[in-house]
Amino acid sequence: MIPVVRDEPYSFFPPQRTTLGYKVLRFFVPTILRRLYGVEQVEVRNMEGFRASVDAGHGVLLAPNHPRACDPFTVGMVSYLSRIPFHFMASWYLFRESRVKRFVVRNLGAFSIYRETNDRPAMNAAIDILSTARRPLVVFPEGTISRSNDRLMEMMDGVVFLARTAAKRRAKEGTGKVVIHPVATKYVFEGNLNDTLSPVLDEFETRFSWQPQRHLPLVDRVVKLLEAQVTLREMEYLGGVSDGNVYDRIRRLIEGMLCPLETEWLGRPASDQSVISRCKRLRTEILPELIGGNITEERRRHLWQHLTQIYYAQQISLYPENYLGDGRFPERLLETVEGFEEDLNDAMRKRTPWRAIVQIGDPIEVDPGRRPRNGDDPYYCQMVGQIRDMLRLLTTEVNAARGIVTDEADLGSEVSPLTTPQPEAVP
Image (cartoon, rainbow, N blue to C red; front, side, top):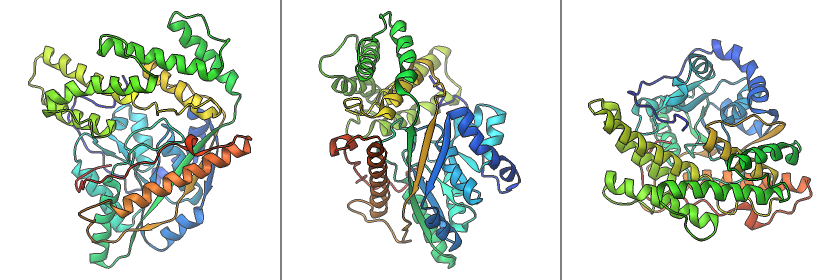
């Protein structure tokens, strides 16, 4: 299990105000992308719209989708090319992995957020950055890596809350506006898919004590491995294998993993909420007891078993329904196999070459007034709508260049806006 939570008290890592480290480290961003993540080229679109917002003195918030671990560096190419330093809101566990990583991410503008609570220091820091227009601020509204290049998960509305609060402060001080620039990041794999995936699929099939299934198309091999992974989790957490297609089984598996924990910790299941929200809520309830320290070793093991179960439920939810389709889309097959690697090995190997397109959307000017009491927040809807539409256009463009026709079913379902006001939500 990747250590996305830690059994130690949270300590806030504030944003660095100095740009000395940034001026040196910014030159390493393309190298980091190439050597660690296999991203050979990054194309940034609508840079002029972003620069216009910065030049106007607005507080600028960039809200990108989050399909891959390298996204902060990919979006950081906007900073590299424009020579404008950014601030990034980043999960706390990244700052605890190593001193080298902490030094790099902090000097590139990152500050920590503890996603398992309403992190007041992080929120205040973000609002201060926007209200002073010190630097553009990058916040990933999905809140976690989606592992899906062409689909959006439900987005947290904390991004809009931060922008509204900062806009209110700027209006009061007469210092200008706050704008949100939605950002769509699209990754294109430009290597030989069969040569890249076949050895990995051989490895996983052998791991399951199968003969390598080389007689099958790649998509059928990937689906079989997904079914095998779901079967293992069903045996572990449900005690047996269920019927139906793999996505129906995933839904039942997630309910079987989360509902008992929600009943124990929250008093009732929360099946009406997104899986990511449910997992975050459970961690919020469990971690204070774990971190408090006044527990037996047996109780500690019990709590870690619950956290591990929550982690696996979240990870299995990151295989979008019908995402693979008929196997026409190389990135979807590759992302799914990389998901297997992460879930089974807690790591993904670098594959290359990737090309990234960063499409910066039109600015959404945030009014300092209150959000509507009833109905959907208009700024949230605009943000989600722009990212979704840009991703759809980019997906259609990339597929057309390959001679692949993209229809509406390939593009996935709409992302539903949040309808329940959450004024204290943190992205």
